[in-house]
Length: 550
Image (cartoon, rainbow, N blue to C red; front, side, top):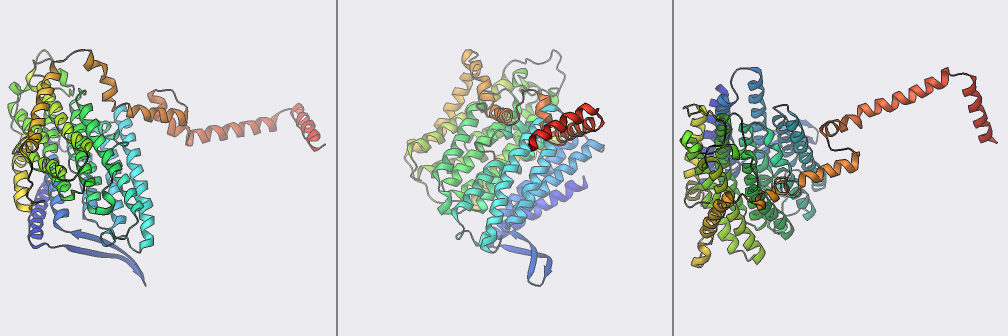
């Protein structure tokens, strides 16, 4: 609990100074000289400006509430919970290193820390599913590290790794490398299959990872590296919009509670990335902050539901939970409505501004329609989730004796609900983000609301449709259009395996130390047999060599 007090104190500290730096337009660089011999210098640089400090304050707020929540959810004062606590603190520390650094080398330190600690958190439950999910998470994140390492070596030719001073000088291919590296961390297509798989982690970890830390690291890096000339790219815009559409569509076919929320995170990441590639960098950062708050609330409420439902995550086994847990369901619905962009909740301010700025941005009809369709699909899967979990008749166990107690879990979701309602308008007034006058015709202005209401209607119809149409595409859509299966095909081509767990776990051993040992032992056995055999073996070898020499 002492750690919790420290984190909460630093949240207030950074938030106060971020407002101060914003008012005075102030930026602070701190340089720490680690090692110096003659002209050779190794230094660690930290940058404090309003962007980094606001993001740090949000990360610290969410992590403090997640640790408070975990004291009830995971338990206290025994070996496993202490391990969990230290992993979460290492994870937050790696994120802080990445946020505060304007140096690509020290960014790589935080970036690698995020990847390694996230692997440890995903495999926390030590099951087969967790191991496989951790493997795919770790391997895809390694791809991003490769891109950053190549760009790091490339930046050597510019004389410094402090990229903030050289953004107008860099070759455009460096930006493409960094964009693709960020795609792996932020799970854009074709690297998006790890994010639903990483739901094998405990729910407080999912809340932290998929709201403000791991998946937003890529978006934050691109905001820092933003260069108008290189970022207005229709190829990357198409990929991020495809991510947004595909994940929203897949969420309408999913029955796992945590996977639905993970796919909604994926669609919001696609929205942030596509707004970046349209040149709306401040709006992308605004939505990043707002999304972190209501998405962590959504995960924590889902964790309470799973906790009381005897570790069940299937929404078909829930129903009428609003009678049993009214407080948790209210908080869940507030965050879900903020996700849909419901008017005057926090998500509305960022999403509505992004859509209206996209209208003013001279995009083509395809981009225009896809944005609005994805907005409708978001409200569609939200109302479907709401209907299955809270309204339908209870279809779980025969005796259900669960009720709500006032504990740390309820306290943490109360604070996040407060911020989910008020943070959007508060940030809007304080930060003056893109505060220009958007003038649109009435029917275009109302288009966002029309699509949200249409999505709500379509989602309520989908829940009543138990026909062949729903079951027909279930496997196709829940496997993210077979994206996970493509990795299995890749393994089978490279390593010639049949599809079972033991082979997919043992391939590293088989082609690593175990395989080398096998071949060495075979060779040594052959030589031993040759040396101890009778005269016939020597005579045969003598004849073979004799004919070879002739």
